[in-house]
Image 1 (cartoon, rainbow, N blue to C red):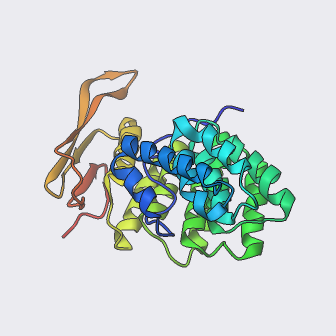
Image 2 (cartoon, helix red, strand yellow):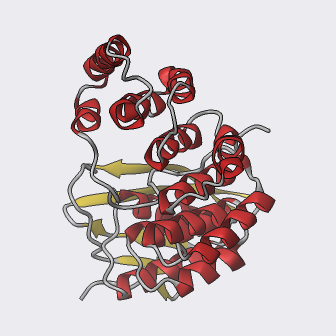
Length: 299
């Protein structure tokens, strides 16, 4: 089964990293090429010292291989040489598969390597499984994993709930996505973006605008992903509007370029341009759509 093509998935299922990363893993982000080289050296030293079967010593190697797509196959080879792999090592492998071009392997690995040995997993396990199910559009297993997370008490974890909202959004099951969202005791930017993206993919653009308003009322700061989703919703609603003007976002501007000609009595748009959009935080100043719809202009 081919993985579903991600649409605007520029955000992850959590806004922070649940667990601290080992020093070697942190170095991988700074300089991936040199880090992989150092990981290979570490792997060679562990083999010479006959410690490559130790799950604690080899875990940085598994992690680095698993999160580097060209080396993912090595992660699996290393994994199979470990005596009694720990849950941490299992999670590294599942995470690697869920983010790769073979996300279905994460589901197969869970059943074949973990569940069959009586290892149920933890919150990080289910985050990877929800991501994998979303990408291969495996609705049945997604619901099974949802039930397991609920039974094991992981449902209340922010990162798990974010992954669930994301998954049901990919399934286009907005009823369940909204149900999970509404039941969350805590929400962050990723929670809102995941739900907004789900509605956007289903073409429910007015609901996107409503969620954006609710997000502003909740005091959650929008980021570039939110603004892009919002802009796409406005583009989707163009046929309904006679004119449209968009104000500034902090020190940046979003310019929606609309054609003046009409095709079959509908507006056609010629482009969408971001001006000066960097990494700085974005803040809504004013958005006004000329048809009586006003989306939380800032006073």
